[in-house]
Image (tube, rainbow, N blue to C red; front, side, top):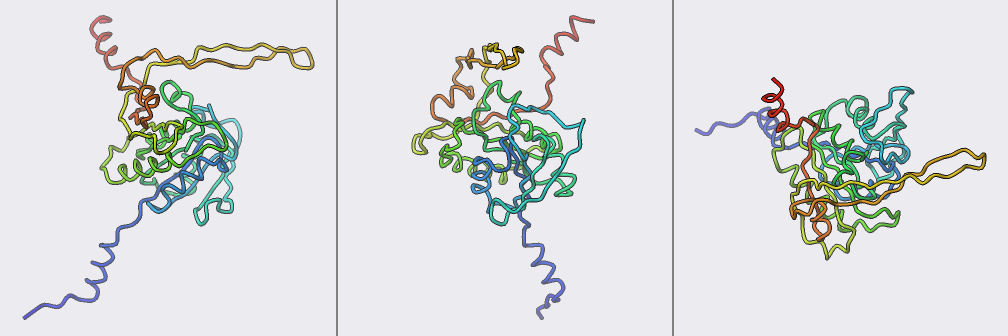
Length: 273
């Protein structure tokens, strides 16, 4: 005699078989109305429940700054991206991540994506980048994350190739059981999509800006300074992000917020007894 399943058991089984969509937090440092974040949303909008929390104005170069000397304001705005829940924040990119988790989502998202930044965040730029600091903040909160940057500062930049690789990398992140503090720094060359050769997992190149300050006088005769500089790559290895980008590959650098120099630590433990 065949046993029949109860309606209650069937309903429970059907419910369990429906997998909830992952929650994906999206932010940036160029501001909530920047073309880059619009293209990021378009690239991944069907991969999960998307929520956008981003600065109300450009915050490039803010690094990991947080707001402590003035109040923060958070405004839900008419969706800029069709039906995607969207918030603007008066604070920094890091503030956006903190407020998103605590006051908007009331939980940790499954993934945090930052960008698509207008301009490079390869090599030493990762230290100064608001885009990457938002991703790092998410990782500190045990949220796997990635920051995406297109090496084109133009407001009219073509994001076609960038969107393709944003989606590809996001899909891989969702399919992979990532360590909870994962942070990926992804940079995309500003070339036609058909010229992109694929992606490479890279190390961060040793490169820096050779800086100069232009000194001028304002109309009142007071001095002011304008930072300028030239990006110089000192690392000629072929496994760096700079090499990959120069050769039309998308670079992916796994980064971390633990700044401990473990090699030097071991040496000093022996020599500084």
